[in-house]
Amino acid sequence: MEYVVAAVILLVVLVVGAVGLVVPKVRRKQLPPPAPTLPADEELPPLIERPEAPQAPVAVEEPPAPVVVEEPAAPAIEKPEPTAGRLVRLRARLARSQTALGRGLLSVLSRDHLEDDDWEEIEDSLITADVGVEATQVIVERLKERVRILGTRTVAEVREQLAEELVAALEPDLDRTLRTAAHDGRPAVLMVVGVNGAGKTTTCGKIGRVLIADGRTVLFGAADTFRAAAAEQLATWGERVGAETVRGPEGGDPASVAFDAVKRGIDIGVDTVVVDTAGRLQNKVGLMDELGKVKRVVEKHGPVDETLLVLDATTGQNGLEQARVFTEVVDVTGVVLTKLDGTAKGGIVIAVQRKLGIPVKLVGLGEGPDDLAPFEPAAFVEALLGETA
Image 1: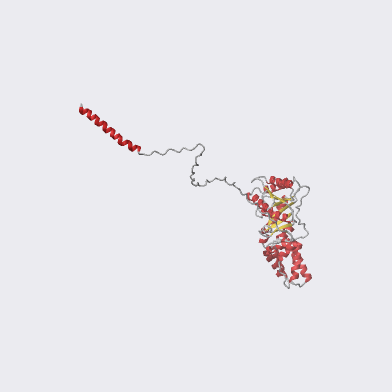
Image 2: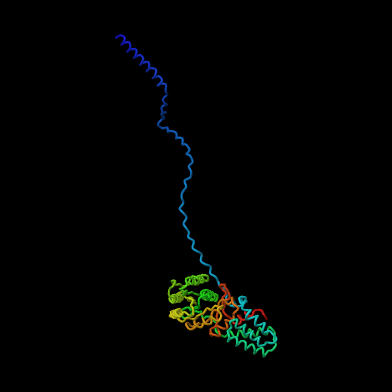
């Protein structure tokens, strides 16, 4: 028992000693000092604010800019050149014709003595130039009479005599005015007819420019509904000079389009309505009848003031047959002779008038938009003869 009691006492001593060693170490750890107590009337010092790190600017999305749709700019309105004296300015276009009707004839007529062979040469030159047999015979007979009376003469005298005879053959007293002034509260109506390939739609555009150059207001009627490009082409001509174009559906009724064009012309008060018609082959009876229908329908608004037949000067005498058939269907009041600059057969002007009794009112002498000129017999002959005196 004594040993047990001694062991217990020894154990207790060891435990107490270990506790004594640990507690002082713990006490040696300093606790944080207590917060100072301030008087009631004293405020705490402000907290020290740390400077904030600079922040990157926040990108603010701006609303997208409105989309601006640019409309195509309207074509600039052209001002056609005046028609007065236009034929004189275009005399160089007739250079090829001078060989046939100018220099050739003058070289023969200037010979000292004219024999039968010489007169035959003169006749051949005139016929080759498409003057026509009947007109040639008249011109030659008159020249013979002049030579017989006057005898020997200078080249200048010969040129003057030839010019007088050619002007006379062109019948300068024929009425070549275009009736294009508005009347009775409605516009004048100008119909343009002709076969395919004569340059009819282009001529319509150029006629519009001639009228505008002379102070008229114009509206186009695209009654050639069988050729898709015709209406578009005519509208382009109109845009260039500020003229409206009335169109119809492709393959539609041409008479209906022509009727609507005149009605529109009445509504907006233009001076002249120019109606383009489909190209017709003169041997197509049904198509020619349709052309007559177009005219009858248009005339419900009032009479057609002008019906111009477009002829290609390069077709020569065949153009006379075309003209004759058209005059049987519609009352052709004048001829527009195109492509006169591309042929040495300027005498077709004489043949057309003599054969048909229809005046040539306009002539086309080039590809330019203003190369259509009012026909003036004296100026035309001067251009044909050139400076060969």
